[in-house]
Image 1 (spheres, rainbow, N blue to C red):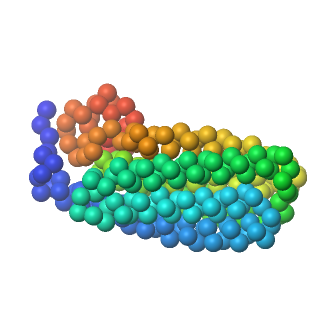
Image 2 (cartoon, rainbow, N blue to C red):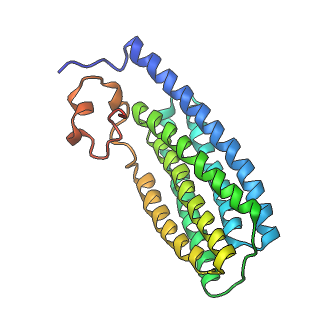
Image 3 (cartoon, rainbow, N blue to C red):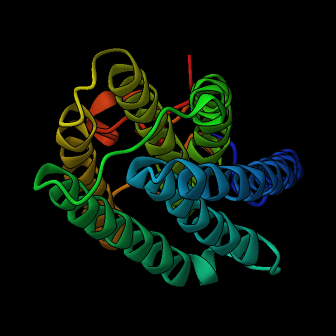
Length: 236
């Protein structure tokens, strides 16, 4: 079956467009997470909320992950920098999992009770709306480009969506019913997901083959068997 050569002008032009899109999405992710981190850390200290503080530190970790992808795509040959970028993303997942686990255990054994935080509730709700869109857009561009690091970073952003939901439920339940155990239990689940995603990023399993989606009409791009995780195919 015929396919377009990776060196053809149309494919090179498309790769340039996708690389530029990834850079813009990464810049947007970094900007939002810096703002999110400042607000969450401030609100967390004000309310003595380990969940909010952890959420703020997660935003700091996400900035490091997005910065790794930005660094990768700032060079002339992004693929040459991909392994280092994946290592940074993987370690950011592991660090997040470790912190969330420690803080969750501390909360479960009664290290302190958080107060009501209106700012925290609003921040969690806004993040729950913003993060899925950013994650989807970056994952779609990363898959078509065949960039493992871009897809891995999109998973980091998606993980923030889960954490936003956990934070929102935890703060709401704590405010309404005083069930302080709900947030740390859910956080332990998120920590397990973070470890899984970190392992995949470390192994480079986020994408099957670089630029496979650009082989338009090829059996590799069209066949599910050629890419079990769907990373190499185009988005529907």
